[in-house]
Length: 252
View (cartoon, rainbow, N blue to C red):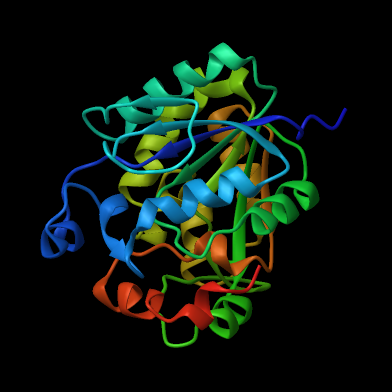
């Protein structure tokens, strides 16, 4: 049964104060000004405009404006914030959770809906964006691309998750997040042969699904999508500079 209607979104907007936030003089990256507004407001606006998202839980970024159903302080690290957010989301009885970060200033409601509606069903669904789509949409932005047999991809910043698998999934996500910018370290989490094939550019997305599935005991799906905005987070000053161009934020 398709249970992607009535999603509850958990937005992670806390975390330690990084260099980007320090330079902007704010507490977290979600509060960094982009086009005269805090970056996280674009994400909350996108969720409010989505037809699929019915409830929003915001974790961290106290003072961030936008429509939410529950607001929680950020926890001590990713795992604490994610666990608290998912626990708060459980009160709404969601069939699926949409987990995402608050540093996606190009995200829109239609982008969320298109991806959710086209994504496969599984315990965990994770989007990847082809390099061609990312470069076409965001020319000049530095991104981390991983080479597979079918091409190069960058990862998205949102997930679809079945709530019942969270006890198995959360520890694995924590480890993956810590090494998310290191493709080989990510591969080591799921076995030597995956690491070797990835290093040689011979890995397949289907093989990655199977490897992560074996290591987590879950039905894992990797979804290739052209929705480049879901992989366009703001990690560096150059990303922030590009975000100031309205023409790059406008497409839906």
